[in-house]
Image 1 (cartoon, protein in one colour):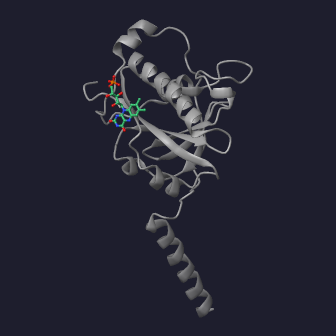
Image 2 (tube, helix red, strand yellow; image 1 turned 90 degrees about the vertical axis):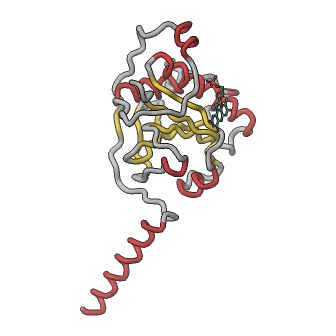
Image 3 (cartoon, helix red, strand yellow; image 1 turned 45 degrees about the vertical axis):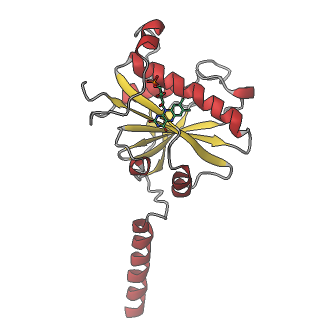
Length: 208
Ligand SMILES: Cc1cc2nc3c(=O)[nH]c(=O)nc-3n(C[C@H](O)[C@H](O)[C@H](O)COP(=O)(O)O)c2cc1C
């Protein structure tokens, strides 16, 4: 009985060390999020949004409300037609980009078909990117189905959708190539062939 107790204590310590080490992937149970219906009418005109579009790395601490996150993701690469096609064009309609949203309380995978956020990891990985923006979008490409060249073009269209939604909704954003992709790929252990190509920071400007 004493030996059994020792064994359980050891197992507990080993598990604790694995999570604390940072190399282990803490796929802790979180709830999926059903995103509210995006509002797809009204808003700023396209010409005004283009006039406002700009990059900024300055963000206030204000959280982005779920309704806004829903619209941001739908604008980025949501389904806009019954045949499953998206707000962003995709080379050969291969749709190889998956958007992961890194938030303070963890990482979620955007499912455009269901318009949901699927819980992925409980970790706050924003320090790896070096930003405390309330939302960091990771553009993860499945390179087993598409060249990196065309996948990068797809990311560019998604990124511009995010720029325009942000410009029209008083959000700051910046598209980033300079992210530590290898650290993110290692940490997040995506499926074989998948890797982070770019990230995009989104948040309210400090002068909101
Ligand atoms: C492919 C691409 C990669 C970029 N990577 C970074 C980056 O790593 N860091 C950064 O601060 N800005 C990055 N930017 C933003 C550019 O610096 C920004 O678009 C440029 O300075 C022009 O400013 P504007 O977007 O306000 O017009 C990137 C933009 C693009 C299109």
